[in-house]
Image (cartoon, rainbow over all chains, first blue to last red):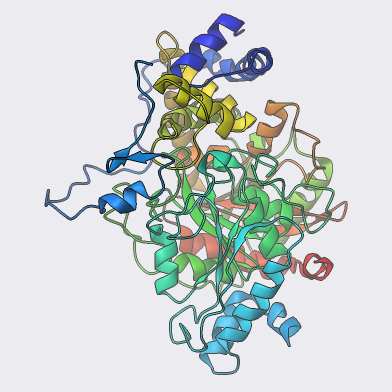
Length: 94
Length: 476
């Protein structure tokens, strides 16, 4: 069961604002989903290594060579707000 | 004339163009016209241009165009992953698999509608509205590659690209009566695919038949320096030609072929097993003991990866930004509130919860252990069997709105596809008949990088089944 306080805590971690109605619904829905998911708690998994990658691959490395990057104006073109050749955001202090 | 073009599979069109019997431009124009007039909501963008005649005709894919799922980045073309939060986004580059297809002579015809960030099994989670199933417009096409599946089934694209994380190619292919291949994890580059769950996401073809799937897939594979999880395909990808299944052993997992599967789907499944026997294959019931836990593990792992991948949508670098926020944090939180739909929010919350302090070991850690057990189940099975077969989806296409109120009822659509995704192995869904007048998919899975054998077996079975998808094209 995930209560209102937990929903609000997780939403803060996820940088997601939720309306009161969404908080209510999320609490009920996540609790319902977790009831199903928690069945994996019944399995005996002692000593089973967690999967890190499904296909056996050891390090995929390449030479560390400098390459040209995207031009600044291309990267700024899709931004919602731009100022002084950078991404414009509201002040963290406001 | 254009009706004749539409009767051809993509591979047949390629052949005719290369033989000089058909103009590439004519194929492109016929499909462009149908895509532009689409009323299934299968597309989010359709090209205005028909390339000049001759362009690409000498290339292996001869200029036969492809419809591309919205989440593939395509330079200068809207790529929004079905989400409001990427409203208006036109990427500065093109995804590797799309670029490879362009280079092989398959230009982009259109972008296709999808569930938002590929999260869904019905296409009802798209910010651009649901796609309708061409077999019955009151029903869903499946998801998340629902636009790609509906477009191919309705003859509005010769073939299409989709992505599969837990079943998002195979399930819509099944519900729309076409072929869908989910390749081995790493066979295709993920570079330029807008990420959902990176350890599971794979690009693959949605096509009218198995030969088309092989031909398109042949030009998608290969290691890409831009995706360090991509791998070189071992050997050549051949076009399928098998007529028989002599000596091949097909395992039928009890856990995925009984309880929870609709009776009509099971009947069609049993008939297909009979056809395998008639073609000389051996069919045997077997067990994948951890498969029933796959869905639980998947709905921890995929949301966990998604919650991390989707952290990048913060209203700073691309897409939309909520108006009026006066400080940085509320700009983030309000943008994400306004930009994400309900299912995406649900999965971000679920994933963030599963990764949060105090819960990580019980959820994420255990789910990764279950994933190891599931992969082991398959490895053991393939010591005895060449292929594992199941129904692709537990039901035929359901009615729009039927499962939108109960997340778990929707998730259960992935019951037979998710174990394979967690194991990273390839699987194909082929249409195997009708139940209640709606298509039923048959899923064949094989070991990692067994795509050649998988396509061959699917081809032999396809010839024996003789499925006719013309009704969906005629209705459209």
